[in-house]
Length: 117
Image 1 (tube, rainbow, N blue to C red):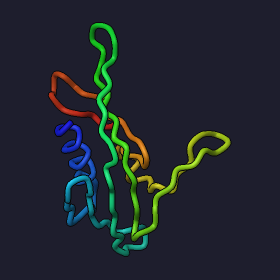
Image 2 (image 1 turned 90 degrees about the vertical axis):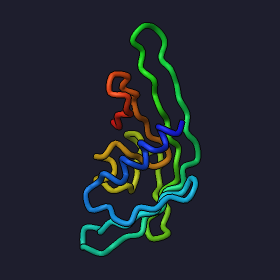
Image 3 (image 1 turned 180 degrees about the vertical axis):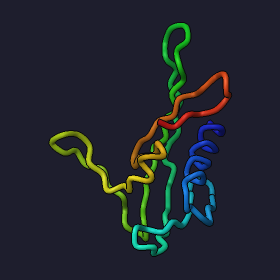
Image 4 (image 1 turned 60 degrees about the vertical axis):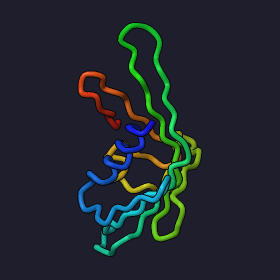
């Protein structure tokens, strides 16, 4: 689980323009400018980490991170819409393979690393 947590945090830190990343237990804080150039203070609370093994030869291990996100104190939401889930999470986070509420990573046994999709 520690590698999944560390990889999740490293994935956030790897995003362009993320600065001042700090962790305190299951809380991650960082700053990133919004589209207008204003700094936004982000807070992520990791609620749970789970590993799920596939069945059969060559099956991959899935890492699941459940988390709550907020930007400048405003919660990032996820709702069920007519065409699926709808979120106000910025695209730059979604493009990094991260998502509010729940996101997944696949374990790459050869690289000994999590891959965020």
